[in-house]
Image 1: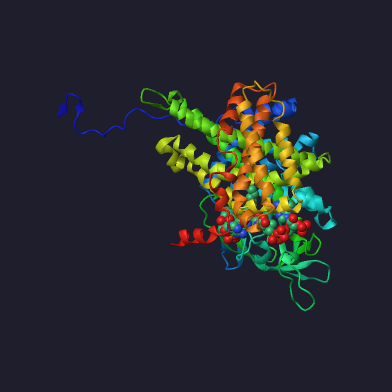
Image 2: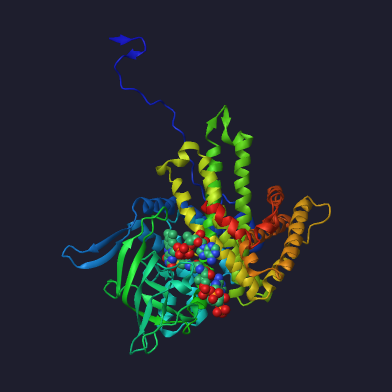
Amino acid sequence: VESPEGPVFSRSSIGTFFQDKPLLKNPFLEDALLRNYLRRHLPSRDVEEDLTKFGERIVQEVDALGLECEENPPRLKHFDAWGRRVDRILTCPAWACMKEISAEEGLVAAGYERRYGEWSRVYQMSKLFLYAPSAGLYSCPLAMTDGAAKVIKSLGEASSVEEAFQRLTSRDPKRFWTSGQWMTERKGGSDVASGTETVAWPQADGTHKLQGFKWFTSATDADMTLTLARIPDKDGRTKQGSGGLSLFYAEVRDGQGNLNGIEVQRLKDKLGTRQMPTAEVLLHGLPAHRISEEGRGVASIANMLTLTRIHNTVSAVASMRRMVQLSREYATKRFVFGKFLKDHPLHVQTMARMEVETRAAFLLLMEVCRLLGREEGGVASDMELHLLRLLTTVAKLYTGKQAVAVVSEGLECFGGQGYIEDTGLPRMLRDAQVLSIWEGTTNILALDVLRCISKTSGQVLDSFFADVKMKTLGVGADHALRPAVGAVNSALSTLEQFMRSAVQRPPAVMEMAARDLAYTLARVYMGALLINHACWDGASQADVYAALRWCEQDLCPVVTKDARSNYDPKTKAMDSALVYE
Ligand code: UCC
Ligand code: FAD
């Protein structure tokens, strides 16, 4: 029987409407701020051409490989078919392609070839900035590889590690090596000094054999690693604390590809970063070379921390940038309530707020890279060296938090689809969450800010004040940016007062103020950078607007409202009572 509308028993139809997905376009061409920043500071046609080409490669090739890494996470095979313990970490072919691409594109090498002199780091990190959101977390081994190369270079390439340095910085995919960074043990990842139990037994040939257990080792498929251990005295006793730790270089596998005195206990089951293996490893006689002075392990690995924290910032800012790019693209094709999302003012305001965060974070990242390039080029002033030390930490801690907030807001820009796995979007939030945990948690880095201020008797802070003033100097009285400059100056003088009175306070007060202090430094400096960029001849109206919007927020949370009393050591008991009630 047929009704007038058609057969009564027909397969139901799912309708004809299908929403177009957000398209990834060339991330370099889509990024006005990155392009303008480079045009302002590094006006080389080469760089622009290379980044345009690489941006295209990301769209055509790399992004799909990154998704493949997510879909085919690493597995651990403990035994071979005949029962022998092999502990092979099996990664997918796309992961191997990422290694080749990284070498070919010089993603580590560019920092050491120094083709653009003091701007080489800005160039290298710009490239990594485009790469990171599509990298399937290959950005993680690259960060550690860069860090290891930096450590080796700074310690002087001893013969035992000269070959390793060449490989870490090679553009030849067949020679290119990656490095791990094994610092964390079960007792502590932040408190490395008390947490490290690994012992380095001296051998007759001057090398050592390591015995211990490393609790988190990322990209464990690396070729080599840097790690910390204690050398026992002739009675077998080790010195505790930081002063007992030395830095070691070790190759992970032997010539046949078998692990070198290492057992992989298991792979971690992680919230995100699933594309990449993170393992717990037992070291039972790993051959290693000491590369630092005895007892100078932490201070010597600090160069690695500097590099990996900068890479962390690259990934944080890049994830925000990618989220904004995809959100605004989607807003041009999602039609609701009679118009496209891009025409709904409230939605555009939401994206504009994400964009302001991203711009501020981007400029801070680039400033740190610029300072690193100057340090490595041997042209940095003392003031710039202080700023590099301080801002590396500040940038890592602040952008790690921003990334989670902006990426989370970004998911909402896709409505329900933002929550759906195979759009590839939720992965971005999972991967952002780690950025404030590894390479030093927010609080640990806030304490590092205090460390570097006190270690230089305040010179770091003097450099900060002087530089902020310098960066905002060129703004005339009737300039549109005046309110932003006013806000920065006012935050600066409040901060100055707070810090002046800090010397009379017990250390516990400063410890409790550390996080707010670090946030203040970040916000004030980002404000100064936005203003400085907006003053440039080539700046746009949007640059001015971004600076104004940024400076409307509370730039100085260290003295907000009743923060002073919040830092009173007496509040510790009340905080405890509140938390544990
Ligand atoms: O998480 C990890 C890898 C994840 C995967 C890679 C991701 C890369 C990004 C990729 C993006 C996709 S590896 C584990 C990372 N672990 C940490 O970050 C440790 C966190 N804890 C800290 O940072 C602590 O503050 C410690 C361990 C540094 C504290 O150690 P000590 O020994 O208690 O601290 P001291 O005694 O204050 O410092 C010892 C020496 C001092 O130098 P001297 O002896 O000359 O006075 C410090 O000034 O180390 C120096 N130092 C530093 N120097 C300490 N921190 C720094 C620093 N940041 N820069 C320069
Ligand atoms: P804890 O130190 O126990 O910290 C717990 C909490 O206490 C944090 O909120 C912290 O901020 C706070 N806290 C600690 N001390 C203080 C203090 N003094 N004052 C105030 N607050 C404090 N490590 C490696 O070495 N190599 C790797 O490759 C590696 N890969 C990793 C991969 C992933 C996915 C993850 C999640 C971690 C990885 N880690 C790696 C470990 C990572 O670096 C540590 O987990 C991190 O540094 C924190 O150390 P913890 O876990 O011991 O935390």
